[in-house]
Length: 319
Picture (spheres, helix red, strand yellow):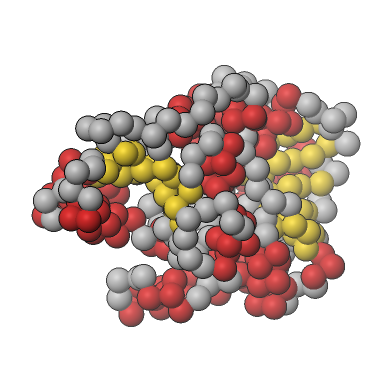
């Protein structure tokens, strides 16, 4: 059986890490399948950082979401391979594959967005843009043969909002990568007096992640617990972090917000182990890997008091 794994449209955030993790598992255990890969440049870099070489792969420098010529090239690649099936790790794929197509969906703005999520956007124009984008992505999500999501709320939303039969949508929960499950991870130790309490927020820069709130939380904590040094660790490119760091300086907590930049998959476990608490204050998620990675690393989770977070974490988080 020949399968084409499509990750050509994934350029940042958890999608890149999930794709790299999935592909690394296919390389470790091929299950009798002849795997081929359509990769974005960020996914290729992530795999290279993990030490993998992919002879059966084609890299696409630009996402098919942004370039029609890339869409044609992706379809040409499929026509050349003639796969028995295509699996797009996360959609939309922005092409209509001729082969049977399994499409992963983790687009919360399409499947289960809320007024609260839209309220985090900075202007009416930004909200209209997000709405139009969700409609456009929802239209493209229709073009597959079967779909897979990470949680039941996404399954129900995909069915009701995009009009896809529930019988065609499967649920596969998220999971930590093998980096978390094959290492002997030390137990967490709470820092002593004078040592910083580090709160790790692993995230790309998305409006619904509410990263701009962090300097204000840091300022409030410094007043409530002046004898404790709380340090918020974020993982953003410098350009995305600049405004957050500037706000921290304006509020007098510049030393309490630290940006370490994007974290590669093979460094992720160590970043968790260097922290005492994992933070996820998003207002729109499906099943962030942060939850299961935090638990695998033995770090407590502080997260938003919202339905999606309770569905994933139950009584294993502080809300």
